[in-house]
Image (cartoon, rainbow, N blue to C red; front, side):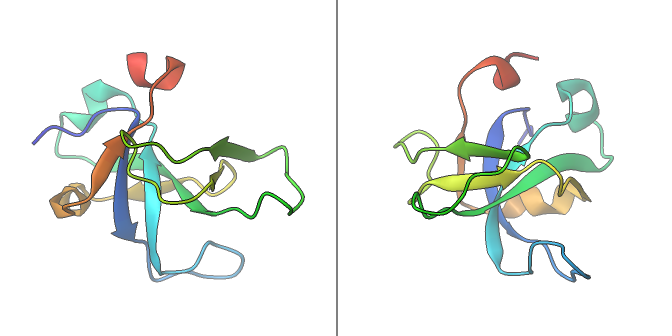
Length: 106
């Protein structure tokens, strides 16, 4: 299976340190380019977490609404200040979706 830019996977990110998003099962958005994703290198992702619409929004968050195609169950904030490099082994996660738009075209 090929990992593509713009795809969402649900993975565990642990272990974490300091202010990193914790190690619970989280959605991650693949942002590395497809050339790298086709190699057996690491994949760059942005972790997400459920966002309460009443909470304050921050500039470093990209908010994504849940849709049938992305597999999210809640409004999700992807924390662009929390980039992670993850091994290709995460692709074995059975849950995945896709975010449509400019990000997914490269």
